[in-house]
Amino acid sequence: MAGHSKFKNIMYRKGAQDAKRSRLFSKLAREITTAAKGGNPDPAFNPRLRAVIATAKANSMPKENIERALRKAEGNEAETYEEIRYEGFGPGGVALIVEALTDNRNRTATDVRTAFAKNGGNVGASGSVAHQFDRLGLITYPASAGSPEAVFEAALEAGAEDVESGEDVHEIWTAPDALHEVAKALEARLGEPQGAKLAWRPRTLVEVSADDARLLMKLIDALEDSDDVQAVYGNHDMTDEVADALA
Image (cartoon, rainbow, N blue to C red; front, side, top):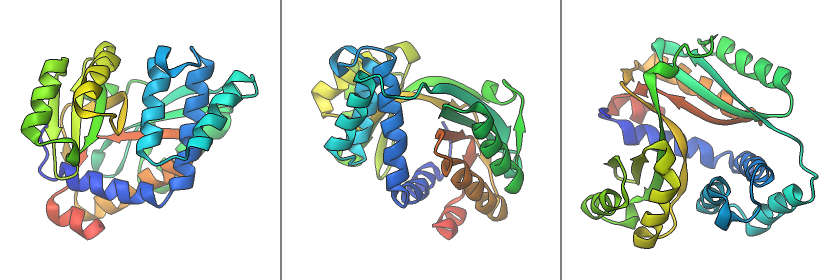
């Protein structure tokens, strides 16, 4: 995937996430509970649960928080959450996909539509932007996991489809149904990943101006402020100058 400032974009978003750590823990706990309730409560036999626990650990989520989320599922105390996807457009014509876990569709729809409306975007119909993305497995490792060459070699042997390495992170892309098999093979070589999940990868990128980028980040922040929103994916790109100004 082309993009001359992709990893600066990641750095900007990571800084925003670090400032919302407690909200991030709450969302991870919800996903852990949902994964455990919807399948085997033992991570060894539940790839989705194993992946989200790995993501929680990589984000320094306390062990007791993880165990509490698991107990909640085992005791049938958990609410029933529904997975919903919203699609829309942000400033500069950027395509956005919003994934949510909710126990109240009306509340979530209102939150998402309000965030778009107040920040220069609009919600589209189902399928309006999904064709601009590929649904793939994504495994992430910190740059310290190895050199780009070493990570590429390990990923190739594990059966991955593509690798992108930057200053701070290695992104390893897989076929959707190969995610957990590749993640398991990589763990033997590189250790536990920062995260492993199904994600949306844009087929092409849209470069945004400084003004559009500023409003777009406000929109993404507003969406992520919703407790129901689990992830936001976009096909935006920024020049180094625009990314530096935002950071």
